[in-house]
Each structure stands twice: as structure tokens, then as C-alpha cells.
Image (cartoon, rainbow, N blue to C red; front, side, top):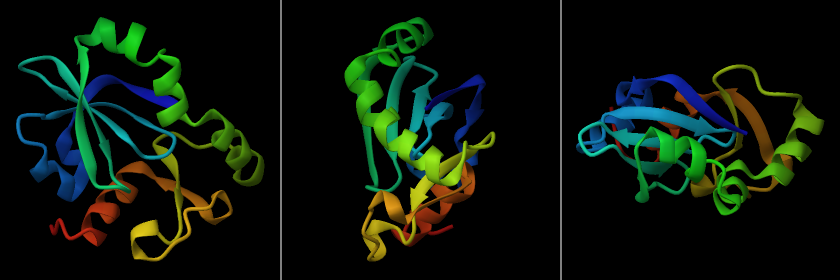
Length: 140
């Protein structure tokens, strides 16, 4: 549901989004639906990137301990980003996700897709994030 990177990854994994993260240079993890947990290494503040909506917002979470023990276990965060009910439906229909794979709607809602769970497929997380950015005009 929520994947935490063993070691933070460079935002270069985000493809075209990597040029739009300002001081945030690390990836701390991602969800089964392609939302990404970002980390500013200087302040240790976490942020969330939602590629399908094009939103990026800071959190009130600072430091790895708070991220692991409070943020990721917060019921509201689990419901919003983990989407356990949707995940169960998709795993029933499409099977479990492989490592570095996520579920996403096809076509993307911002190019006319419905966003309904019946439209979801699964694929490689970094490719999905990069393509979502390209479709939203972020360029290479």
C-alpha cells in the first residue's frame, strides 16, 4: 500500500518532475497509486507529489522517525494515499503489484479518462510518473 525506500532515491527517478521539486531532492517512498513521498534533505521536511492531479504540497512531518511512526500510520494518510478499499478491489481484478509497480487509470483523467477503478491498469512507477508529467506539459 505504502512503499518506503530503504535508502532515499534521487528525484531524477521522477523524470520530468525532477526539475520541478525545488530544494526537495530525495524520494522517500511512494504509494500503490503513484503518489510520491519527497524529502528535503536540508530541513528533513516531507512533501507529497500527486502526479495525476499535478499537486505537490508540504507536510507537517519532519524527520524519518516522525515520517515512519506518525505520518505513515496516521489513519487519514493511510485512507487518502493508501486507499485500502480501492487497493483490495484492484488486487482482486489485476493481481498483486510487483516491485516498483503501481495502479493507475487508463487513460489518465486529465486526458479524458473516467478515473473509475474499472479503468485501472498496473505498470512501472517511474514510467507512470514521468508520463503523467509529460501529459501535463512539464516537458523533458
